[in-house]
Image (tube, rainbow, N blue to C red; front, side):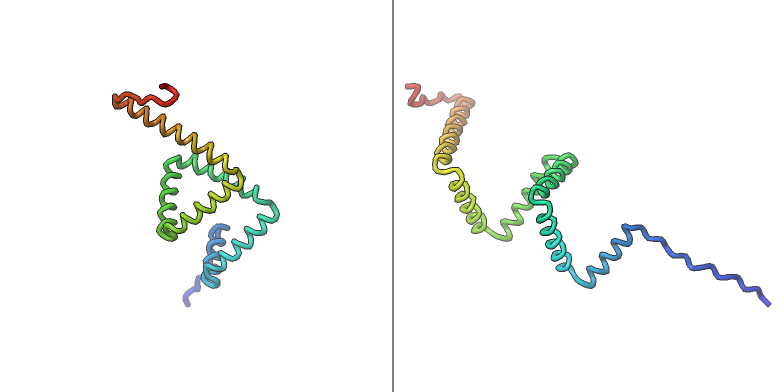
Amino acid sequence: MAKKTPKKPTEKKVMTVQEAGKKGGETVSKKYGHEFYEAIGRKGGKTVAKEYGPEFYEEIGRKGGKTVAAQYGHDFYEEIGRKGGKTVAAQYGRPFYEEIGRKGGRTVAAQYGHDFYREIGKKGGNRVRQLIEEGKKAMGARPKKTKKQK
């Protein structure tokens, strides 16, 4: 009679915490869908904001921004800004920009008043005048005398 070899106990693969979390997340995602994660994220964000205030988000945003800037540099921000701007423009169009510009203008006017616009207008006009004169000098043209110089 042939001797039976004893069966080896089935070996269970030990999961890391990361693997278990991923598996659990995939199961929940299949069961409840993407909207479930949006809802719990929103709920968690409100709870954190209530407990820690907006300064908390400002601080973690600043820290994250510094880390990303150190890792990817200025060009990265230019690229993602350009991509984001194109996406928003394609999605919302010109009326969206007109509306947010109007809202921003009203907010600035309410906060700083009419004199603020007068001051920045003068600064902008003077700077344009200066750049035009510098351009003429660079091209060899004689600069035009201003009213004060006559």
